[in-house]
Amino acid sequence: MISVASAKTDPDLDAVRDLVRAFVRWAMAEIAKDSNPAVFEGLERELASLPGRYGPPGGGIVLARLSGNPAGCVAFFDRGGGVMEIKRMFVTPEARGHGIGGQMLGKLLSEARAMGHRRGLLWTHKTMLAAQAIYRRAGFREVPLSDEFVGAAAGIDVCMEMDLQGETAA
Image 1 (cartoon, rainbow, N blue to C red):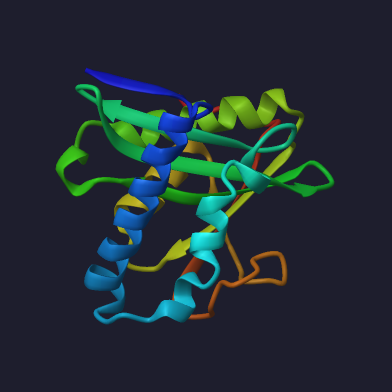
Image 2 (spheres, rainbow, N blue to C red):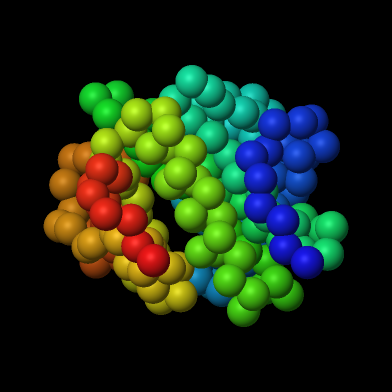
């Protein structure tokens, strides 16, 4: 059984911390192929302060569980001017293939719209094709790298945006 809900309690936030750390280990092994601490500089500070910028009134964290066990997370924060940015989307390797990423993203977009966000931004590594497909199905489209995508690297990352006031994907 899959459950997807806002992460608000201390145990939920601890599960998110563990998932984000698992994501970093996975990304360093599968994408970076080495340990490059600069890629996730400041991450432990961010995790210690959760919900931090991902908290209300302009942000949120979504946690998915599969059979009661933490299986994935995604968060967003307020960029100002009706714009939000998605960060930290991850589904554990053993939980993939259950539609968890799409369910989490749907919950996140619903929360972002309810908070009044009109536009969503994200960037992801060029090799993360499954994640890109989830984002496209939700209504995101690829856009050129610009100053809006702080930390994204040309030729390495795929930048995407979505009009949150347009029609929602089925």
